[in-house]
Length: 261
Image (cartoon, rainbow, N blue to C red; front, side, top):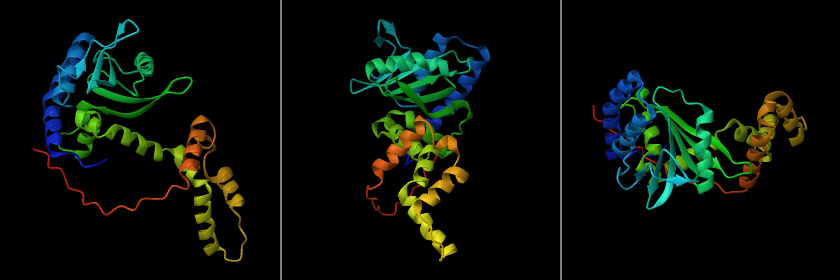
């Protein structure tokens, strides 16, 4: 996902060590939603790096109703947060109010959490308004020593937000979705590569692109990823980027992040 800064990694790791027993104890006591909001505010501050007094607010009014929490950066609404009591399992219906709030405010991101489990949704400003789950993690299940776990929290942290890490992660997830992969496989550039390889197998056979495409559609790729609205969105994406030149990048040297024990 990128190079996690050492300072941020250390803060997140220390935060996990501190808050995992706090969250476990709160879950055991089955604390109410108001108490969960207090814990979530502290997690946003101590683990994710937001200023408790200037960047986290519970006074964001939308249509005469206050949302649970909101994160503002440079005075702009960045993230709306719906908080449920720590003992509740998060249901898809719980995020609807947050999505409605976000759509009304033109905010692209909504989080749903019970303190332990965190979900981040991207709001799609279509008609009707839709939303997509981008990332989900359980703070109590993450390891302070595992960089990939720390990177998940980094996506929602202040530093990650400033570098658009969550948006980049959403783009990567879209590129690797089964719908995008299916659309890419039956697009002309991939069909041409397949025809070239099939000529190695059978040099004398005359195979055109449409024949290959039909076999893929009928016998290889599942119909469910080639039909429907998500498949159509993926086809448009692949078609729109078909002639985009690939950027050559210099080899990157990955530096391991040392997480204090």
